Image (cartoon, rainbow, N blue to C red; front, side, top):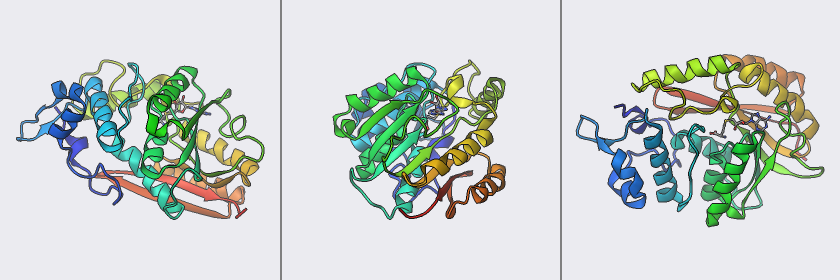
Length: 298
Ligand code: SAH
């Protein structure tokens, strides 16, 4: 059993409500299904087996219900089951970027919202923002819609739209004259299905879990890889963003590999971005970052 993800939370954003150790008895009372996965981790602490996808799914459902009253979050087997503390952190850093503005007038586009629809659910719950979740995979889109409509507190704040081309981020989604304060993205970061599978095996190995194919944080092929990997995906996004400079306040995306930053910053200089920022995030030893850019005030 591994308890690492629940205990190494140093570095999370100060407003991240998942910073402190999980109160498992309270979570189980919110979401009793979690109960059968909670065990003593051998150090006198309650935890779950983070390599067990069913356990992680039950934990996520409990956290979303306990923190936000989102009682209807579910995923079919095999879809990306997101670690909630890290996903929340991106939302809070975006809030800082726009001066902590709250309410439905703040509009956010989530490129690749996934079956889990996690950013709209957290962003709408924490800050009351309105979201458009774009998704290229129609099965994932159906699930995203379901997460949104099943939860009354956010249903009016989340709209899901089908992207018809994996090569496009904004085209086909942002309508003429439509305005977003922010765009965000957790891009598919592997360059091939084989690379994605190797990454999953490594991650599960680190968690001490069995290697059984699709696992806990893992995901379906299309969630994890795209032609050319993360670098090519974000380069395409930057190139496309130029055409949407007047529609969007800040464009942002996670960048999983720090060595990609200099190349992406170069692409942003070439695209004549007016301002570029790197939002540094950390969860214990694990560092991550979002790249943010904007063109001009409109
Ligand atoms: N936001 C979720 C899912 C990320 S996985 C999370 O953080 O857990 C990346 C998602 O992007 C997948 O669901 C994949 O189908 C989708 N995707 C890939 N290319 C896309 C594109 N060009 N436009 C919209 N969605 C895309």
